Image (cartoon, rainbow, N blue to C red):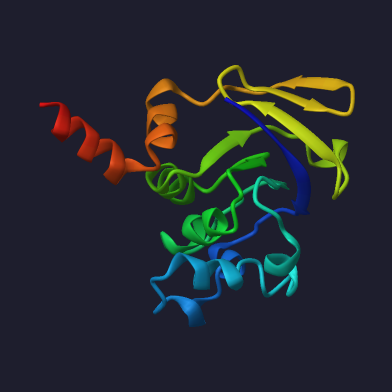
Length: 162
């Protein structure tokens, strides 16, 4: 799976309250959650981001409370992957459970917002300008979750196969 898109940069310690503020947690509609994604630090983000764009962040992306709303909000904008130096553990699992791909790679200082990036999700190769960075690829089981659109869809498929 090759993903290409424009980069949106966010720094270290982007918590789930930044990804989707708590006042919107009563919402269940992904489109509405997406409209408020990153609102506290980038109020126009949801209006400017395009499907296929990619988030690049620093360390500890997704820290804070363990809300599934955060990866849902990101996916609702059509963002298929987040690349960060590191992820909070609960966010990491919630993201894959919802079908959002994550790759750990320290590329924050190598890119600028608006740069084009290409990621081979299977191999972990990230192409920035003419540079290729080798990141750890997504584990096979987690790739299955991504391919099926999350854990629930994956389990439904497995049950249907029986």
